[in-house]
Amino acid sequence: MIGNVTTNPSLNSCLRRMQVGEKRFARRLESHLEDDYLCWYEIPVGKRQRYSGFIILHPRRGLLMLEVKDWKLEIIRKIDRVSATLITPAGLKTVSNPLEQVRQVSYQVVKRLERTRN
Image 1 (spheres, rainbow, N blue to C red):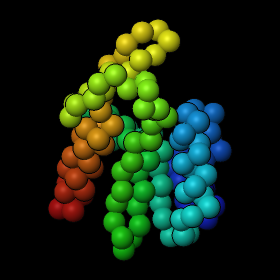
Image 2: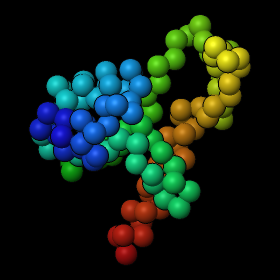
Image 3: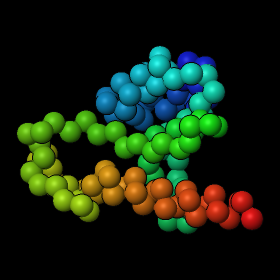
Image 4: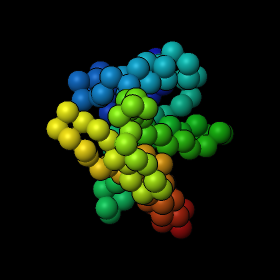
């Protein structure tokens, strides 16, 4: 539960896995969202088990998927549509672009919703 917002899994069970920015964002959800929202944190979606940091659902307003990153501008070496190259203590690391990551999850969610509608 985030405030009166229902989360799955519960916020307390997620806090130890969350990065600093994700915790900060979860606390904002807790203090700012109304109680008729449903939120999921890091749940696998679809056959490919894609993850989005936060999936937020409101019965009248719709679905929002967010990927929260703690990146500072100075650690981003390069970013394009598909990937981001970050400067880390262990050297350069290439990861998925957060927008692409959420886009892939959204495809899986839409497919799943289309199947359950029929």
